[in-house]
Image (cartoon, rainbow, N blue to C red; front, side, top):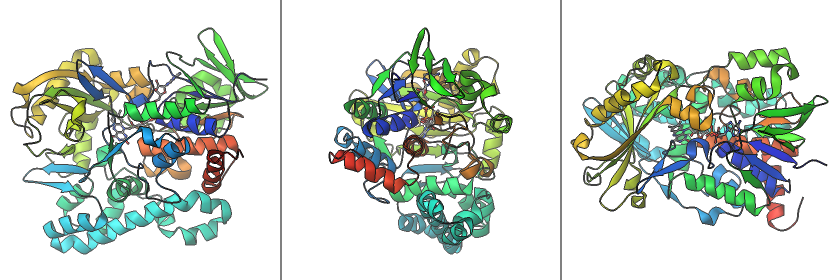
Length: 510
Ligand SMILES: Cc1cc2nc3c(=O)[nH]c(=O)nc-3n(C[C@H](O)[C@H](O)[C@H](O)COP(=O)(O)OP(=O)(O)OC[C@H]3O[C@@H](n4cnc5c(N)ncnc54)[C@H](O)[C@@H]3O)c2cc1C
């Protein structure tokens, strides 16, 4: 008799999704979280009367429209019967992009997107339309791919999922340049590249397509009250179905007996379970918490070769400027160059040359006192940009505030509160390697079958979160949580998985 059926290490959105769904399926589940609250990068914090999001600005996957019963986060919350405890606010345009000499909102719906940019770039209209339709086709094929692959052989799958097979090894730039020739439009089309942490010449076209279509077609959302609410709601769902969560409980070791997982050690406590899902950094889980000797050498080599994503620097600000009157968007990407490969190269060199400005109080004023607004100034940066983030932090904060002042006149004179979050901060609160914002990079050689799968070769060990399949971002890790739960329950088809969970909803345990 073990203490639990499943232990989940980490309460990021991927870990909580897996934990909640397994509790719902009737498993006894314990979540161990080293921080004092759930959410990982989706957690929030309070300073004075300001409610800040530590990381997440905008997500997709929350809508009731979608394949077989809605988009993934909606399905999870509904399965846990907590969907009424949370409110998502739709954001359209899903972002705004600034370039030297022009700026534009990126509207939802393919028709509005093509109409907006077809007007600005009439000669490119057809190419833009064809490219966006291709992104839609890829995203639709991805939705059904898992289920289809379980039913047909490789050759049949190639016929049924033509775009996915054709473009699975392509980058965004390789595909986009076949359809669009204007460098300005290429830049605008790729404006949201920081959401995946890689520029057009490196990011997987397939992963890009799911992200773009997620925001453009399925919808972009802010979570009322901040993204901590999403994590808290998932925790409520877990607890409603008998699951437990412990905070300030850092998992140190995963116990192995007879070549299989047997439990987890937290300080001087041991919790036994035949199944562990790690939502923590995979390399750390495998090499430190378990031990390399328990895995095939080729698996270890593969993990050591994977390339991790960049980290992020954030300035959290409160201001008494009237941002509504300035017509600022919820999320603005501000670039001094339309060439995102050059923007990325400067980032890799540790330079601050672009930023995103998020103003969550524009859609949720209750995050700050009346007449005040919150801002998050964000840029990607490598962890190694400096030897001491403690010393470098004020300089980076100042540079981001200076840059943001080009888009928000008078900002510096109207700051009521400021705090910085460096790559070292990101690492400290989540233990992601070097504060990686998205786990492994989503380059073509690290997504799809090339990503570290949810199931490890060690009996009883699975993964959920941005280090495993399908990849980074809240939408991606929610899918990973579903996939990890499927592995634990041994249900390969998603439709069957949701069917069984919904039977539990109707009081008919499967
Ligand atoms: C600043 C920033 C902004 C972002 N903005 C967006 C956005 O707007 N939209 C979007 O979709 N994505 C965004 N992302 C990416 C997204 O937040 C992440 O990809 C996603 O949230 C990762 O979820 P996860 O499930 O992998 O867990 P993580 O968020 O990585 O959390 C892992 C959890 O595990 C815990 N943990 C780790 N090791 C242990 C251990 N040994 N014992 C116990 N607990 C442990 C950590 O404390 C943490 O709570 C952003 C990322 C950052 C850094």
